[in-house]
Image 1 (tube, helix red, strand yellow):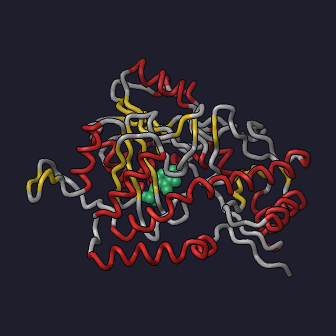
Image 2 (tube, rainbow, N blue to C red):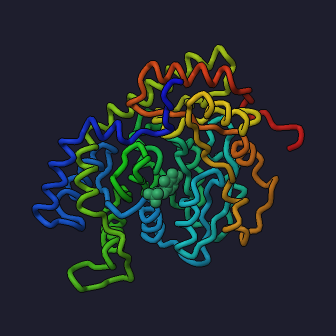
Image 3 (cartoon, protein in one colour):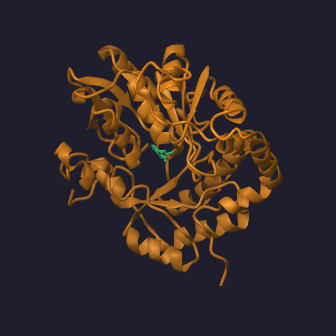
Amino acid sequence: MADVIPYLDLAAQYRGIKSEIRAAMDRVLDTNAYILGPEVKAFEEAFAAAHDVRHAVAVNSGTSALHLALLALGVGPGDEVITTPFTFIATVAAIGYTGATPVFVDIDPESFTLDPSKIEAAITPKTKVIMPVHLYGQPADMDPILAVAERHGLHVVEDAAQAHLAEYKGRKVGSFGAIACFSFYPGKNLGAYGEGGAAVTNDDRYAATMRALRDWGQTERYRHAMKGYNYRMDGLQGAVLGVKMPHLDAWTEGRRRVAAAYREQFEPAGVALPKEMPYARHVYHVYAIRVADRAAAQRALQEAGIQTGIHYPIPVHLQEAWAELGYRRGDFPHAEQAADEVLSLPIYAELTDEQVARVASAVVAHTTPVRPGQVRADG
Ligand SMILES: *Cc1c(COP(=O)(O)O)cnc(C)c1O
């Protein structure tokens, strides 16, 4: 039998950069710069430049970045933050950490991102922030989101945890909202060798506040101007990310090459493939097709030696942890349908043409497609 094609292969990426990584880690270990330090600072500058923003504040996870972004904008108990229920739980957890209440708006079934036409109805006098998620690496439709935010005097925070180097109408994500947040969890498009994240902004005050908050609220040593957190990035993670940063463009191109090859096979076969919206440069953190009878499809692919994933099987409004919000099945039909149908295929720069062809033909052979927006008769 042919080798198994893993959903993700971080060892393959490491083989290509091993000597650079070892040298960078040695620099940290030889100088004891374990927390923040010059490697982290250099990475912050490179990451900000790559996204055409003035400041990047490196922290210990994407979740911490989201938490600090909301705090810097003054979000707290009694406030509401509008976001999508079809996301990783961390988006909503970060809102909860501030004491604010998450308010959900359904997705557009073609893009899997927040439906801008449904936001206005969810705004109340308590709304402070709209937090779109650039899910799977495709930017949310920012122009109408920014327009509704402006009409109501709201801030926008981009959850760009899955969208490093993605573009909306030719411009990199990261500066559409007041603040944008990225994750460097190992499996993300730019991954540390542990936890990591960053908040980016063009606003000097937000950047200064987040720098203080990540480091116990210190504005100078042992002077605590605000109640802060231990959210600093490790020196080793900064060194790893600094090595990886110059490769990110090529790795992103590699993901797009795989997506293009899948499209070539899937379009004629009628597979319900992900749509790259006309305004988007998708970076394919996740390549999710829609299938009928997903459990059977996933089993058949597993038997054909192809690992897949599900991002995400339960929308946040139906998670037990958030039952207190009082949502029920039927509240966000597009998010619920997506959660039932999506199936994520392997997508990374190290996949060979032969592997991509094997995945594609197995998908065509073993799955039954559904069409986005095709709402089931049983609702
Ligand atoms: C990964 C992720 C986060 C959280 O990032 P961590 O670094 O894991 O804390 C937040 N939002 C989305 C959409 C994510 O995919």
